Image (cartoon, rainbow, N blue to C red; front, side):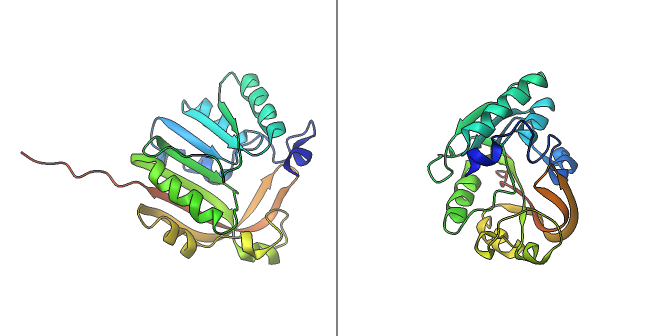
Amino acid sequence: MWDERYATDEFVYGTEPNDFLKANTDKLKPGNVLCLADGEGRNGVFLAKLGFAVTSVDLSAVALKKARRFAEENGVKIKTVCADLDDFVIEPNHWDNIVSIFCNLPDPLRKKVHAAAADGLTEGGRFLLEAYTVRQLEMPGDGGPPVPELMYSAAMLMQDFQALDIVLAEEVDREIHEGLLHHGLSAVVQLIAQAPRQASIEK
């Protein structure tokens, strides 16, 4: 399915980074970043251009080939991993940042990936997510899964990331214009969470 979706010369979700990610790059921790379901690389390449060491993982080899070409055209390098997130191992205490943009997963895969992501962050590392809520099914905009079972909520995400410090968790309606497949007024949830920092010990 996904290889077929990406098998076009056009970037089906555009080449510009996600607006929520772009507006919050100052909240990311310097260092490396894991981009979940990064597709054609618009977000990974954007972060690489800002100096982050980027690893993009996606199920589609077709999309990742386009992502590597897109990175080369922009004068940066990204590491790509073709894998199902059910099989991909998020190494504990390894990632300074993990980014999940419109990676709407079914339960219990969502819980599995989010638990691994929380454990995968370094001290003070950041997890940033934007995904569709169930209200998207009633919205005029195009985009998102066709079934409520794949939708997220702020309460759901706060539960998933209860081990982290929640910086932001809110559901909003906003205009999205990302290529051919994300377009118009949409209902989303946005999350930024931080791995706790160890308390300093005074001597």
